[in-house]
Image (cartoon, rainbow, N blue to C red):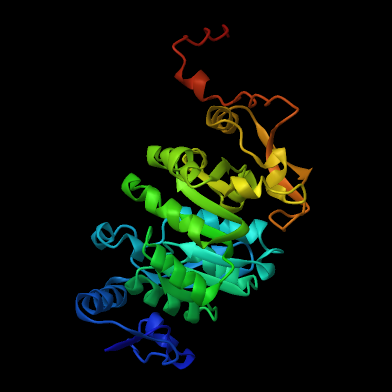
Length: 351
């Protein structure tokens, strides 16, 4: 049986609850046996139990995605069928920092999920090649979400740690390797770190960069501190206060999520004309950063930044301690306290 990636424009109503199910026939993928059954199961789950979610990125981009809600018990076994906060964080980062660079970059998202939100944002910014990698059952729905938003991505099946799988992706899509690799919330399983690091190194081209949006798992620290250096890569956390501001993030979210920039040690640190090389872009220690977000009044100021690959605008707002101390609120002159006072009123004057 052949399953078809994508939904033709005339049939986009399937994502609007009308049950239309004609597929575009321009990209067949042959499946068989248990893989075919699983593939159909995920597609049916998204159709029967999924929801249409509108995601706003910045002020000009709105995407409609068909996925399972995070609250659904089905997500326990189908993590790739939901949209996770890390994916939204990375999508906002791409929109704010990569708007000028995307047309010049070949991009691969690892473990994209059915939403592949960072990749869809990159496609909307004009990237010439956006490849989304996950299980075949997942990327089928990913393609549908892309077409439903008039965007185009290339879905591929990728098994982490499998050299042949990575070689197939490289040969088919980008023989010289990809310029930018994206990943969101993929480090929760420490048992797969070595395989992920191996695939990352195999898929990255010369001078490539990788961006990871992750919760502050202990396993994430282990990946950046052990598995990634083992294949010759290094990583540093980025300062992303402007991205948090764009999302309207709470302090709790800021304190529990990071974006890491990664590169091969053999390629050297980012060049001086790349914003990632600027010291202002590197985050402080977590303790200093968290304390800064929690303490004292803050205001947004404009700080000049390097343009480089377009990872930043010419200026980017960052948090800075306010020059003026916080003013105490004016005392309440209400008479409620007088009414509740235990003091007896003075005697009335004699007539």
